[in-house]
Image 1 (spheres, one colour):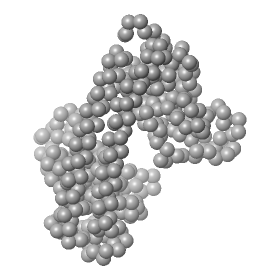
Image 2: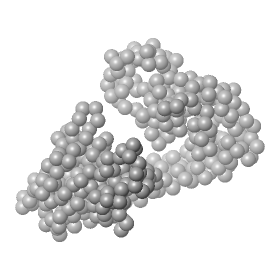
Image 3: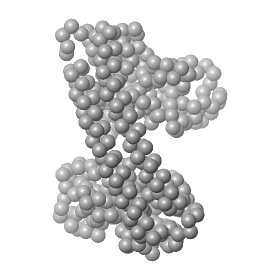
Length: 390
């Protein structure tokens, strides 16, 4: 705690209200867009996808977010916060706390304080309730202790942290530009994979690859899972077209040996076979030897197909729509090996695929440099928050 700074509970410098509890059985009033927890990222509100619900006229003011209000996630990633910066108000639902500050505290200063408390584990361990799913209830939120230095000091700290945060944002935009460039190169070289306007040879995926689903759930039991063993790749471990293992979700070498038919090799492409079936990743040398999880399936190609080319095919909007249309299941979409085997796949000449893969390799190297810069800046941001708030 900094000498000379005053410390107060959040409830002493702000008021908080949860949004509307939505009830589909009472669809009266007028249909309005609203924001929920999925729209709130750290220091950013993503309006790409907005849900709609019915609100009565008398509810509009009560459940409106005004410019300068801080929105805090009540459940899931508890404490995740962002400020509504637009002049126009927006409605919100009960997965979010709307926090309005007195003149003692700047909203952005409070947001950075909460971010720091989230980073050091206090939001989850000290203030959030629940075992399997955490919740940050109103009384806990308002009990969080925050530093309240003079407003001039708050402005100075916010200005410094904002500059670092803006650099991070710009670098993340650069990553998106590289991804867009890669996708543009794909379409320029190969066209749409479903329309196939370039007239490439088309074969069923099963004719040019071996497709295998992960092990049945009965082959793995609760006691088989350990920390620090051989990772499994389930849909939750496929992120941004990369396999990202959880070191706490692994099995022993002995158990992995029993499941040798499910070992992943370099250039295999692993797919989520249920739920978000558009997820996929190419297995690199770092992930070779991991296991295909129960919720996934993998495709091992013949030499006619480059795995990098294949991954970009399945990333296209048209191909994902094709996957969804072929998937089974009413409540949760599910892919099986026979469905995958019958998918029609364009096969351009292998040298052209390899040329594309080389271009993507160059882009990935540039992305890796940017990602390292982002990591460095995020470390700097965390260290400066620690300096100011610890």
